[in-house]
Image (cartoon, rainbow over all chains, first blue to last red; front, side, top):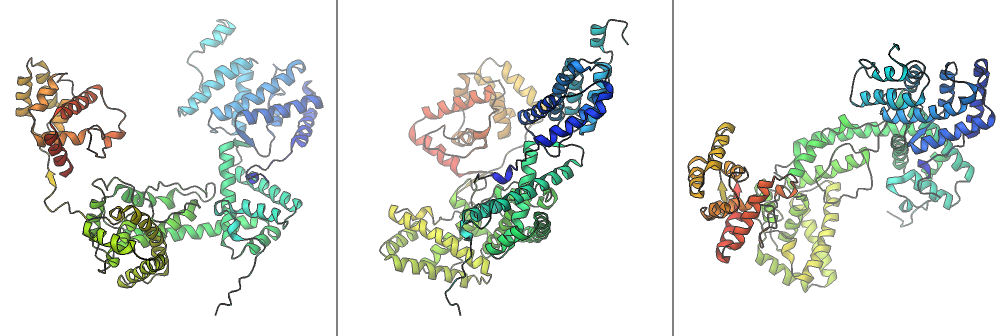
Length: 166
Length: 462
């Protein structure tokens, strides 16, 4: 018997997690977004791989569902790239869980991701990951009280969207 | 009357690992086919539920995931708490029954309760130790007692029950370290309390002299005071003196060498045993724990004596006392240190001098403190060959004092534990004067060098 088997209680929750993800189709179909069982399975695998690569353990689960529910009404997501965006969002979520030193709750982080993705980043995952969430994580690590305060004059926005952009 | 027949349990307690009790109990149970795969699986599932529950409570429901380190720590805390209850049961059969027929959450609740009681017990011992601690300058001893006082405040029995949380540097005479958390602390405190009680039977002056005899740097060493005192007390009894007499000189070691080496093994063992009993009787020790502790310590001392007898080195275990206040030591009291502004002026003045003789004149006139002298040597105002002239203007006493400031092992035949040995941030000019002084001392003739080392060994900074 493995010497430390008690320290690693492995439960195969994969199938129930896939079923839960597929269940979300009931809600998302009204926005024209649907996941096939194969895609759902892949999302669960991405979650497992990301957890492993970021040194985290999830007990209970439900993050994929929360992300789907939060992002399904985004004007920047269409059926074509729905699944690939979800993969990215799952990775981003766990990456920033670590980077924010677990200071943010799951719901707070998802709200910040959604808000920045839909508004400041205009659907750009690159901007979300490398600019806005990075800044928030840095502020949290430096103990800033208002970690999600906007830049003084969002120069990057002007650069990307022209001077007329507010 | 004991019948000599022992009850046999299905699992031998000796086969279980104290630091990993539940795990080893389950492994043994599987090996002996006392638990089947279904039961083991049920335990794992219950543990999985418990870790989920504890993680939720740890994150207050805000986060469904935690880092692997946090999860492991929570798991270890849960297992520690379960172990705590299981270890409190009188037999392994009862442990097995508990695992089979009780819910793990119930065992966990009982474990938490026991830990809570144990924390209260440690508070009592902490209070007692504050009152019976011995007066010594040993840094590890004093720091450990100070750190232990924070244990009840820092200890987290819910999420990190297995954690030690305080830093314990002082080594006990017998410290198995096969436990952790509050269990280790309470064992440590109990032993430390009884070690203190034992040492209290001797005069503090004698203990202090014994430590000085052990090493001039005894305040900085990680040594167990009780062990040293007991060894000398045992030596004294073997010499047919009082157990309270800690004085052992070189001739005593010679006498013991002659008398013990010729003794047959059986006689040696009984001599040691009767001497231990004599110590216990003479010091009026009644507590059973302390009696057993003394016997156990003497067993290891006795084994060491046997080895040292072969090498004719009994003086390694029986320490000769040294009185640092009897006049053999030189006590040095530093003069008044100059203020920063004056120091800056003096160093600038020295720096601007063209000739070393002028520099020396200023040093002799303005510097009245040894600390200032060291600061000046490392203040970039004396350069390269000038050091030699500066050092040659100093007498043996000054050089002996400067020698103490050098990192150890620089000068052959001189060993002095120095905090500078661990200083990784010496400035370039400090390194320069250290190198210059080392070279200068090595260039001296042998008798003078020996004299300087001898003075340095006797120097005590007040």
